[in-house]
Structure formats: structure tokens, C-alpha cells
Image (tube, rainbow, N blue to C red):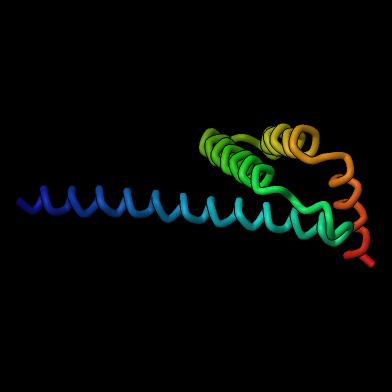
Length: 114
């Protein structure tokens, strides 16, 4: 009976910790999207991300973080993780954002540094 209770408690704690990590990942992806949108809006108030772009970028960040987590478990070095990040950020900057949004983001980031 004790083994059953201990096994059940262990199983529940693993499930709960998985949900907590998932929530952290979602929150981090949401923050990344909002930061990107703010950088664009700082450069040009009229070129903010559309809802469709926000969803696509959010999903890309979730995929990226899952792949990074998997790479960490497999013992990947920093160069491998940089390649993973590069692949996903290229999707965002080349496939989703418009040229005008990229220019506005650059302008917004330059203004922040001043």
C-alpha cells in the first residue's frame, strides 16, 4: 500500500512539474512576442505585429524552446544551440516580418540604445 501511495505521489509531482515548465515556456514565448512588437512600434507606430503574426511568432518560439530543451538533454554545446536559434529566428525575420517591420524594429532598437 505504501508503495502505491509513493508511486502515485511521485507520478503526480512529475506531471505537475511538466505543466509548470510548459507554463514558463508559454510565458517566455509571450514575452518575446511582446518585446518584438514593442521594438517595431518604437520604430514606427503604424507597423505593429498583426494578430496572425503574433500567433506564428509565438508558435515558433515554443518550437525553438522545445528544441533547445531537447538539445540540452542530449548534451549539445553552445554552437549547436546557436544553430537552433539561428534557424528559428530566420523563420521569424525572413518569413513572417515584412521589410518595413524589420526596418522599424532596427530603428526602434537603435533609439533604445541612445
